Amino acid sequence: DTGVSQNPRHKITKRGQNVTFRCDPISEHNRLYWYRQTLGQGPEFLTYFQNEAQLEKSRLLSDRFSAERPKGSFSTLEIQRTEQGDSAMYLCASSLDQGGQPQHFGDGTRLSIL
Amino acid sequence: SQQGEEDPQALSIQEGENATMNCSYKTSINNLQWYRQNSGRGLVHLILIRSNEREKHSGRLRVTLDTSKKSSSLLITASRAADTASYFCATAISGNTPLVFGKGTRLSVIA
Image 1 (cartoon, rainbow over the protein chains, first blue to last red):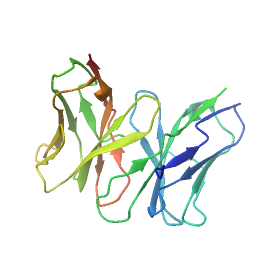
Image 2: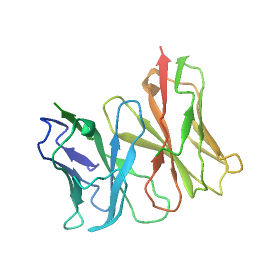
Image 3: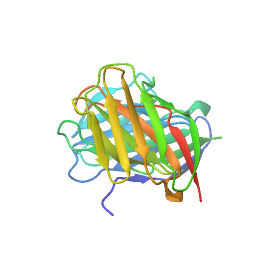
């Protein structure tokens, strides 16, 4: 399967702990996006990369959140000092860099904060 | 913030019937996309329609776009139980900017 892969699928942690998620995009896709989705809502944009450059960050992305894409391939999203409100599904998507391309999503990482 | 608003929020139909979902948005766009999401899974891209297009078809799916009304509709014909999912519209204000999603329509197709 050469789709977008996210690990882990589920993460349960205590409030205050740090967590890191990984996303492996489709190999030829330059663009990589992170979204967050809570129950009953659509995904909300967090940040995105073109190759290794982080091009935009949402105001939703507090200073506890950091994302990297060090070699322009896989990406990691880290949340420090997790809070109850961080509980959500974190979705990664990738796309080609040409205008108006569909985004291909992974199955997400579901984060539960105890 | 979410730009798109899908209507209805939930829709329940019998297998074989058609399902129509509507989406309204607020700002000018480059393209509008429809996605499907099965419970606990990621989103699957269905159709992309550009701002200079009015209608697109893909199999049993038909999408229309009215930029003057800032609205789009997704029609699924001859629905199947496997079409049961949430459907989201998403807009992009330029070519490959991040998508802004609506809250989705939950479709239930009863066999």
